[in-house]
Length: 524
Image 1 (spheres, rainbow, N blue to C red):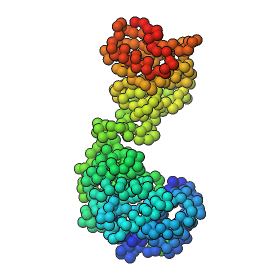
Image 2: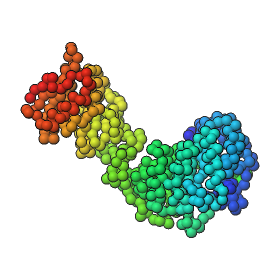
Image 3: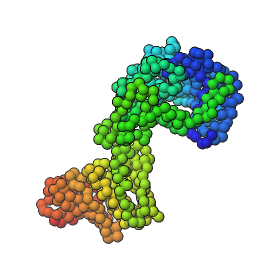
Image 4: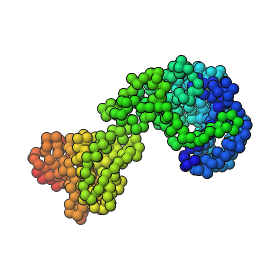
């Protein structure tokens, strides 16, 4: 099987609902979905999956709880030691508290994924074709919440339910639901449908943006909302909540009496009928977006899709939640950067949406990352440089940092503080290092631009070179002496400009109250 993080077992198509988008209800209505009479093959797949490293298990259907051997399957999974068992259900049995208690008596840690196909009773039952199905899910929420169970909710987005999604916060939050996943319907999972049925089923993606925004606004910050497979360009302001694919999942399915499929990689299969548009080549989100379904393209074309370039990203993501994409130009420009000796090469990788790591390779590599904000060895409007690993040769390391800093000059914007020797261990006396760190934290100082930090006297003296907008220069210095730390400044003209005086006062305020204030030793 290969080592994966999650095992998913589909216990047949048998289902009591008749959802407009789902093959299972259609197969059941046509008499093709039979009960799973023998659980032994399921046990074998559970054992093989656990042996290959899976620790999370999802049981789904159809409606898995309708299968005669469902409780036996759960019991076997608990006995094997699966750390989390997800039960994906439409509430047909969990509406009875006694059924939930029967499951809990088996032991194990459960997540209950409830299949709401609309945030209101009208929308849900219009989609499921089953009167009473919404009330059963609400009863399930009540039981599960009372029993302190982990609850998540899933909805497939179709024409009959998308307008209802702003009602989800009011419905779910009172029951302690921890996650809501909305997914664009995959047409090839819908069964045998006519073109007319697909046209009635699939909403135009651009029509979803307003209801989704209203829904997101109703949830508290940090609530886990996933919008699956919506192209980012449809609503780029919703990009923090949009996801394509998921964690690696091995899926096995049974249909009929012991007729098991060959295991498949869930998300690789789900991408088979999706394509990106030609305009996607220029989109910053292209590496994480799998495009649109072929059937959707046949219905609506590609006119909705519009590449998200740098200026558009800056407009829709001012908080830089996707900082790694904002750094695209900086990273791309590294192909023309020649690392100074002794470094021999350079490579980069995105560690997360908010951070890109850059490594200058060599016998003693230099490893740093770019982040949108926070403390670091250097900072400008565009990014913060954070050091993770530095060579023992501080001079070589600083040359490399300054090389990058200057290479990115066209992208930097306002300089807050540039790199300096204080980023390298042992280059500054500890008392000075603490004060310089505080100055970096509190910068900028009015309209003064921090140009360079110089270190001398064996690390016992540090001087900041700064200048005002007109080019007037000032040097602020700190020096370790027998009596502690002395501070002072030197001006390039007398009297100094108002900007210089204001900046020096800001530096004084930034230092600890116990530190000597600038002005104790000054010269023009």
